Structures are given as structure tokens and as C-alpha cells.
Amino acid sequence: MTKRFDDGTVAVDNLNLSVDAGTITVFVGPSGCGKTTSLRMVNRMVEPTEGAVLVDGADVRASDPALLRRRIGYVIQQAGLFPHRTVLDNVATVPLLSGWTRRRARDRAGELLELVGLPTELGKRYPAQLSGGQQQRVGVARALAADPPVLLMDEPFSAVDPVVREGLQDELLRLQAELDKTIVFVTHDIDEAVKVGEKVAVFRQGGHLAQYAEPDELLARPADDFVSEFVGRDRGYRRLSFLDASGIELRDVPTAREGALPEPRPEEWVLVLNAEDRPRGWLPPGSTVDTGSETAEVQPGGSLYTKGTPMRGALDAALSSPSGLGVVVDEDGRYAGVVTAEEVLEAIQQRRAEPEHGEPEQGGFG
Image (tube, rainbow, N blue to C red; front, top):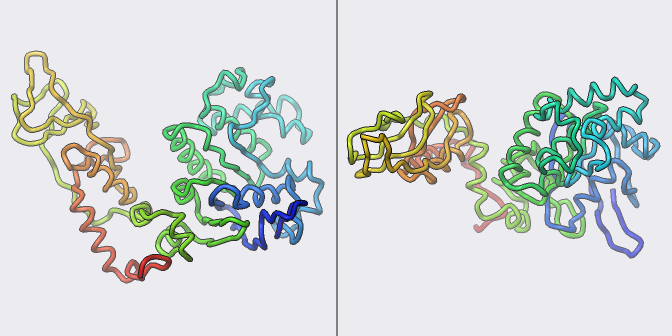
């Protein structure tokens, strides 16, 4: 499809791609590259100048726009909630328009609030009484209310702070594992794209599709210099998000309990654990410990690496730790061992020697 505006501007130039059912596909690229216009042609908020958009084999132009949009969920920045309606009534909007009874629509809305991680009592509040992250969750719940097979998301998390944004990304992945929707997601953030996308479409200025690939393929083999520059010079580090850390041997370090700290001035780094074996911080070598009051100069421990998750987390844990030892925890957050950056890098080198990881990259120097 192509979109050409009245002034001659070409927003989308001969875009041709297929989105697999039940997957998350991300459109990413710099501002003004046509990714949002492409998204809006799916639900006919923008009409293509040439070509066609097919959903499940049917041309969307054969459907009435209003009816089409009730069958396609749509989430935008800052949620776009109706300020004069309660949260529950916001979520119930599309089911009511589709002819549901008010009781059934509100029951469905309550179920969806729980599904997106919000307590049902928030349903009585108005959007202005919610945080930005809560509003975005309500926006997702509203888009899911009529159980649409397709969900369009236009930079849905860009208006919240980084911590909330990461939590919303994780929530989306959890929901997708449960609901199996066909999701098209627009962002300008390559880190967000490779985290949530099963396939990523990189757009360049002029509405051209530069590359369409799975995230690992995109990072390993950029199609050209534009894609290579856009995904960033640290794409090798990002690729660790797709490499598991199996084979890295964990080792132990001295530990101490909160409330039962060691004698003054330990000779090496000591990991402080609480009563449930969850890490609380590091006690540096030579630090002062007041055994009378059971206080110590405990330093924050950096990020934690959950055993079995991608290698990027293991390297980050080691690099962010004041001791140089990345703390590894199990799925319940309990201490399992430590790993050094050198050990992670050694594991990466071993993976590179394996045939499936030894292919040369494209789009880079040499």
C-alpha cells in the first residue's frame, strides 16, 4: 500500500508485508517515517492512496469504518480515556456500542481490570484520579473489551517514566502469552521494539520499509547502513537478550544475615541476605561493623540476574555490582550464586565458536 497526501507528500511508499496471526509485530523508525500512518490504514483511520489492507484475507475497505474499528482494538499514547466517565464505563464503551447489556459490559470491564493488573475498586474512579501507568492499563483493557482478534498500539507506553514503561512492557508480554492476539505495535524506541516484538519492521524516511525480521536477525544482520545506524552501535550487547546463559557455572561467596552480621572488617566482599535468602546488599572488605547495634556499611548490590533468563541480565548484574560479582537469584528472588563479567564474556566467546553463531554480520564495517 501507498499513502500520498494532497500536498504530494508520500507518507508510506509501496509497503508490502504480512503480519503473522497471534504474534506481536513492531513498526519502528525515526519520526515522520510513516509507521503510524501505516498502522492507521489497518483500521481505516487513514485510507490508502493505492493498494489494500487485508485482515484475515478480507479487504478492510469492504467493512463500514465504525464497525471495523469495534473489531480492532486501538491503544494510543496517554490512553485517550473519556475524562467524564468512570474507569469501568471507559472499559465498557465498545461492548455497549456493540449491543451488550450494561450489566454484561460492566462485568466484562471488571474482569479486564483484573486481567491487566488493576484492582477492581479502581473502576469507580475517574481517569484523572489514576497514575499514568494505571491509565495506560485501562487503555489496554478498553481495547480488549470486545475480545478483538487484532490490537493496534500506537506508542502506548511513551508517555510514562522508564520504570513504569518497563513494567507495562512486561505486562503486555504476559497478556499476549495468555490471549494470543495479533498485535501491531508502533514505537520509536529500538530497545522496546526488540523486547516486545516477535518481528520488527524498520521504517526509514519517506515511508520505505528498510528491513523486516525477527529481533535477533535484525541485530545480527542489519540490511544496510541505515538499519545498522538505527539499531545502534551497541547492538551486540542488545543481542544478549536472545542468548540464554546456560553453561555459566555459578559460585558461592561469603554471606551474612541481616541481624547476624560478621565480625568487624571482613577480608572480602560479603553478601547480606534477609531471613528469606533474598539479597539486601554488599558488605565491603574492611568495612566497619557495629556488632552492638548490628549495623554496617552495607552497599546497594546492583541489579539481580534471574537464573535461566537471557545472558544480557547476567552481564548487567556483574557490571552494576560494586563487588564485580553479579548476584544470581531463582524465580522466587532467593540467592542462588554469583557470576563475574569475565565468566559471562567467556561464555559469549564459546557461543561465537558454535556454527549457528559464527556467521558474519552485514551492514557493519568490513
